[in-house]
Length: 363
Ligand code: ADP
Image (spheres, rainbow, N blue to C red):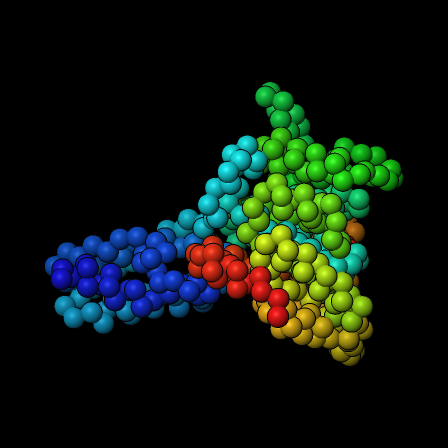
C-alpha cells in the first residue's frame, strides 16, 4: 500500500465530534498527499462555529493518527471550512442558498424564545458564519424590536422579490415590517402558510450558512407549514425550568417528532438569578427542569442561561447582549450555545439518516 493510502486507512479510525462516521467517509479528510515521508492532509471542517480548543483537539487527533503510520515523517494539515448541509431541497425556489435552517421553539410564550433566537443568530455571526433570522412568530413578532434600527431596511428587488433587512450584519425578515405594530395579526392557517411560503420563496436570502427561525410558542399552523415547506436541520427547544413550562415543551417536542424534525437540544432559560449587589443565588423558577426534560426525551441538553437584567435590557433597547456586551458572561454563554448547536447540526447531517432518526426518538 502506498504511504498516502496507509494514512487514509489510519484516518478511518478518527471521527469528528458527534459524528458516528469517520473523517474519510464523511469527506472531512478530502485528500492525503505523500511526498517522500512528508504527508499533507486536506481537511475541510464542517463548520466555523466551533470552540478553538475543540477544533485544535480534533486537528491534533488527525495529525496524531497520521504520525503513527510507519514511514510517515512530517505531517502538514491544509485546513478549510465548508459548512455541512442537508441534501438540497427538491423545491429549488425556496431559500435555495441556505445551508441550514434551525427552528427555535418553545411550549409557552414568555420563556425567552425570541431572546434566544436573536442572540443565537448574532452569536453564529460572531463565529464568522453567514446568518439570517426569520421571525416566524407571526402573531407576536418581536425580533425587529429586539434588534433596534436596521443597518439596511427591507426593500423590493427589480425582479419583484424582497431583500431582507440587515441588522448587525445578519439578514432579517419579519411580519412586523409590514403590519402596524399595534395591530393584531388575525390570520387563519392558509394565510399563514402563504406568508411562510413568501418568506422562504420571495425573500432573497442569498447564500447563508444558518437561517434561524423564531417560531410562535406551542404547536400550530406555523410549525406545521414550515416543516411542510422546507427541510429543517433541526429544532432547538427553549424552556424555563418550572414544571408548568416543561410540560408544554414535551408536547412541542412530540409535534416535531411527528413531522420528523430532529431535536438538536434543549436550552433552559432563566435558570437562576445571582444578585449583582450581594451575590445571593436564587432559583426563581426552580432549576434543572430543562436538563431533566432533555434526559427524559432522549435529546441533548445544550445549556442554561441565567436571568440577568442585561439580557432584558438588551432586548428592550434593540442591542442584544451578544453585540451590546460582547465580553459579558451572557455573551459567552450564547457563543457556547451556538457552538454546541452547530456541532449537533454537523452530527445530524454527517451521521446520516439512522443517527438522525435516533436523535428524534422520544423515550
Ligand atoms: P418569548 O419569545 O418566549 O415569548 P421573549 O424572548 O420575548 O420570550 O422574552 C420575554 C421577556 O423576558 C423579554 O422581556 C426578554 O428580554 C426577557 N428575558 C428573556 N430571557 C431573559 C433572561 N435570561 N434574563 C432576563 N430577561 C430575559
